[in-house]
Length: 438
Ligand SMILES: Cc1cc2nc3c(=O)[nH]c(=O)nc-3n(C[C@H](O)[C@H](O)[C@H](O)COP(=O)(O)OP(=O)(O)OC[C@H]3O[C@@H](n4cnc5c(N)ncnc54)[C@H](O)[C@@H]3O)c2cc1C
Image (tube, rainbow, N blue to C red; front, side, top):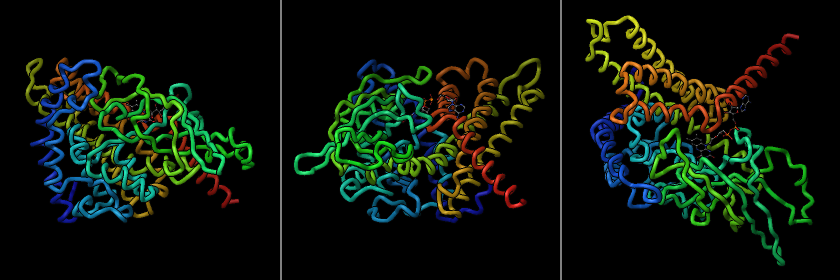
């Protein structure tokens, strides 16, 4: 990919980042895994379980100016300058850096650019009150705490978020003071098991059953105005169990099944206000998809590079693997898949830069959310194949990357839901075109 369209400042950040990934993050991966290896059960979710190398890498990333690179230009307002990168990046520029970050699973956290924290920080930058920003945004920007986003529920099909059943019951005291009780069950709460995770953002359905005076159309609220995002202190959340992802528990962050048992929250804990849940969830997800997709490209490139090395170093039936036509086809298809994935994502990022953010690029964001993990998965699958048995072993990152990419076809909404969105947008355009011809 030509970097000629990057400014000298961004090129400099990129070359520092590339070096940081290759020379600091990738070599630290073994140390990270070894630190967790002999810890069992609850010991995997304690402060002691957090590999010291990650704090070391965070300090190095800060010193190198690689910290908080995700903050987009329109959200810098009110952020103390010490938390902002020296150059605030466009979506396209940051996308290019995300490809580099994807080449080690340690880099996003090392640079404070990891999901779900970036999305939650963006919510606070967009909509947070001064108090919410002080309590949660500042420590998140410093990398002192972590956060999670609690939407998915075990008992309902959560890919249609209008199904969400966790309730936020509005209560009115004798003097009109308002508070809320939160009740429900969530799962796949990424990061909730992490002992550093102090704040959760919960999507809940409004419940006005204890407010008989409220006449509002509460009982027939539109499906997209019925939910609210509310902030909870994680010490009030009951951990039911850690979940595994095809056998990996992803400690010490993890993915949890949690319960919200009658948690008392105040109006100051709501994001924007009652009924704004979908607005918040939408604002949170758009930019995150560029980040996920470009990191997926980086993961694919790492596997592709391993595939090339392997093809050039093993022999079967009298020839190097690289000399067999079938192997060459895999290499060619992978090169093409990577370039297609990269260009699609960057084209989406450019649309967001030029047309005013995630809303304008809605269709393209849905397209890349489906296309990129699938393209990247094909590359990783071929790399695994060319490695034979070695590809499946933890000595190499291939199997773990395959699992991580596979989850992207479901996490943040399954492929089918985004394909539906793309089709609806395209059909709407086609209908309009047809009508204009009549
Ligand atoms: C590793 C991982 C991390 C995650 N992290 C988080 C997190 O941090 N926070 C959070 O809230 N959630 C998280 N999730 C949950 C994820 O976002 C949900 O699993 C996803 O949105 C789907 O919801 P569901 O599991 O309820 O599936 P369902 O809604 O039950 O859907 C199941 C399947 O139905 C099919 N389907 C649905 N709609 C259609 C349609 N219109 N047409 C055709 N087929 C359709 C699809 O194949 C879909 O996969 C995570 C999931 C994973 C695996």
